[in-house]
Each structure stands twice: as C-alpha cells, then as structure tokens.
Amino acid sequence: MLKDRKSQHLDIVLAGQARAAAGASGLDGISFEHQALPELHLDEIRLDTQFLGKRINAPLLVSSMTGGPERASAINRNLAIACEALGIALAIGSQRIAIEGEGSSGLGAELRRLAPTIPLLGNFGAAQLNRGYGIEEARRAVEMIEADALIIHLNPLQEAVQAEGDRDWRGLLGRIGALARDLEVPLVVKEVGAGISGRLARRLCDAGVRVIDVAGAGGTSWAAVEAERAATPRQAAVARAFSDWGIPTAIAIAEVREACPEATVVGSGGIRSGIDVAKAIRLGADVVGQAAGVLDAAVESPAAVVAHFETVIDQLRVACFCTGSADLAALRQATLLRGAR
Image (cartoon, helix red, strand yellow):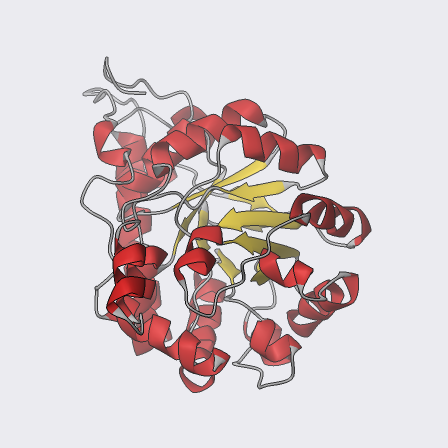
C-alpha cells in the first residue's frame, strides 16, 4: 500500500494538480532596489557556500521527492548525477520503504557512488518515531547512502487528511531531541509545504536540531494531493478545504532566521526561479530548496536537471549583479524597496 501511495503522489504532482495559488509563497511581495551602477563584473560574482561541512557551488538543494520504487530509482539516479555535476546538495525522499526492507528505491550505496562529493541528506517522517523508529532506524537511513545529515519531515496536515494517515503526534519533540543528541550527523527538521514558525524552530533548536527547512506554503499542497486521491467525497472535501493552509515561505524564512540566528536555514516552498532564490537568501536562508519545480526534469534525464539548474543559477547571478552583490554575504544585505520585508 505504501508503494502504491508514493506512486500516486508522484502522478498527482507531475500532473500539476496540487500547485499552490500564485503568490502563496509571499515571495512575489518582495522587491529588490535595482542598482543601475553595480560596479561589479558579472562573471566574478561568487555563489559558492558551505553546507553541512562541504563546499557547494551555489546555495541550492534539491529538496526531497518521492515516488514508487521503480520510478524513484530512476529519479534518484538522475538527480544524483546532476547534483554532482553541478556541485549542489541533494535531499532524498522518504527512506521508509527501504528501511522496512520493501525495496531500495535507488536509495543505496549506488547513490553515494554517483554523488561522491556533494552533501547528501537522508529522510524519514517524524510520525514514524511513534511507530517504533528510533536511533537504529536513523543510523540505518544514514548508513544506507552515507548521508551527511538526516531529515525528519513534519507533515501533520497531510497525515490528518489522509485516510490511512498517522494520527498520533504526541511526544515527538522529545523523540526528535533524543535523535539530535545521539545521532552522529546533524539532524534536519523540515515541513513538507505548510511551513515552520519561528516559535517552533526555537524549540527544535533548543532540543538540538541544527538545520531547519521551513518548506512553507507556496509550492506543492499535500492537502490538495490527498484530496485528489481521496476514496470518498467527504474525505476529499475535508482535504480540499486545507489546500491553501500554511505559513507562506517568505514569512517562515524571516521568522526562523530571527528566532534561530545560530541555525542553518533552508528556504523552500514555491521556489520558481533564481530570483526567488535571491529573495529567500535575502530573508535569511543559507540554502534554498526546490522539489516540484525540477520534477519534470528529474523524470527525464540528468542533463535536463543540469539545464534546469543552470538557468536558476544564471538568474541568481544576474539578481546579485543588479543588487550590487559580489557574493551571498552581500546579497543578504541588499536593499529592498520600501514596503518590502
């Protein structure tokens, strides 16, 4: 059933049936002050940065994606090859199927062989910590791909509107804190599209979490995904009511950065272009993630993924140039137009 559900999710996202409304991320409401005399050489602008102890060529992360085992293997292979060629980070989809021995979905040693130098992030859902998962499963997820960090993803809305969803979310902060304490690699906590508030981020950081991926509203709506696959009109109606639920990405990034100045912040949720990447960096993100926006390319080939992100990187470079930002540190201080955050 889990394999079938993951495959259904992929079909719905690829069909574009779960996209958030235009502007839902909040990034459209932010504008940079244009610098008509940047005093820079475009080709000398530095976009490289550190992430999880490794140097990456641009502040980009391919965010977690999922799918049925056969298609997931091809997608993961394409992404690994492309991210290694680009020198950007890769976060894989949920490893639950692989951890429970129902197939690797391309999430094995081969993935690290294809991407030997970039940051790789493992992943499973927080709800599994109330279903017997603990430090052994976390270490297995890390060892499986020689991950540089482990993501614990939060998806309470999706679980609440999914007929077969996990309903028990009691005590999870303590269990996440225990993993953060005992695991040998950094623990990342991410939402899947409804955002993380500054208040929750502070609690997570106090519990030992080092990286927060806000994954705000504005990208894929998992409530809308579940509405599409609902078995009854009642289930569909409940899920559909929450299609636009969540904290906009722009607000979530700014809140989490203010609440957790020491944390590494990943900005994701509705990132459509290199200009959105620049805005997320300016709001406080260290690295910016994209998932659904690259999924079509990931299904096609490594070359398609490379071409997609080369465009994003070119857009980001021009945004730096036209804000007078020689590097990412300067971009974080770029002037916003009055009225913009």
